Length: 193
Image (tube, rainbow, N blue to C red; front, side, top):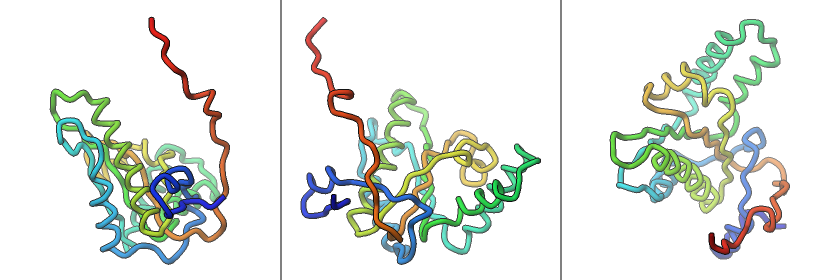
């Protein structure tokens, strides 16, 4: 199967595949390309036009600082962490050529929080679509750092949450399919009450 087939929109959507961030290598997008991706990603469903999310590009010269923040926070929670666990935290922040952090930043509004959080998730998905449409591959991770208050506070404020770390680059190896649910397991036709 050819992944991220850009010959048509349906072909792309039917073949969309994220890359594993640890397998993404140079070349990565330029700052101008990242800004264009963010502009595309922001064209997402957003009830109330609140823009309840924001994007943070973590430039190359700040990736190690982010790794240090993540590692310090990890050690505060797990002081007995071994060398491999610590290296994994550094690797998390420094993998792939580019990193955009998406923050869920809900607004005071009559629009329910749930809808605002769904919009933040949609922005993450649109960011992946933008990266893929521009010839790169992205990977959306949350994992431990996304749920740590110290990491969140280094990137935003207490009213925000990390919706995703979006890593972008060029695959260093062939993308592989992953198991997908059978349509019969996820689709039903409502027959009434």
